[in-house]
Amino acid sequence: MPTCDRCGTSLAFNDETTKLVEYACTSCHATEIVWKESHRDTGTVTAAAASKTPLGAD
Image 1 (cartoon, rainbow, N blue to C red):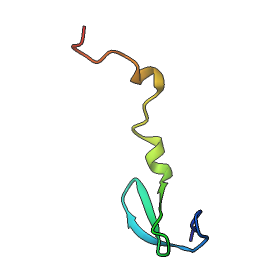
Image 2 (spheres, rainbow, N blue to C red; image 1 turned 120 degrees about the vertical axis):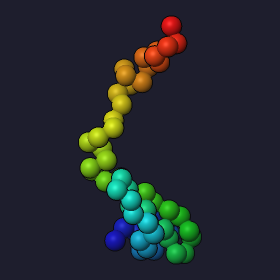
Image 3 (cartoon, one colour; image 1 turned 90 degrees about the vertical axis):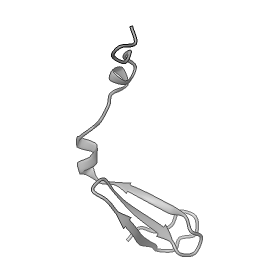
Image 4 (cartoon, rainbow, N blue to C red; image 1 turned 60 degrees about the vertical axis):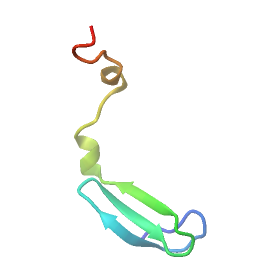
C-alpha cells in the first residue's frame, strides 16, 4: 500500500477503474492516482498527431 507524500500515513484504497486506481489519505485527505500499464498501451497520442489540423478545418 502506498504512503502519503504529505504526511506519511498509509493511503487507503478509494476507487478502481479499468484505467486507474485511486488512493486517499485518511489523515490529510490527499489523493493519489496510479495509472495502470494497460492504459498506457492504448489511446496514446503523440505530440505530432495532436498538433495536426482537425478534419474539416481547411
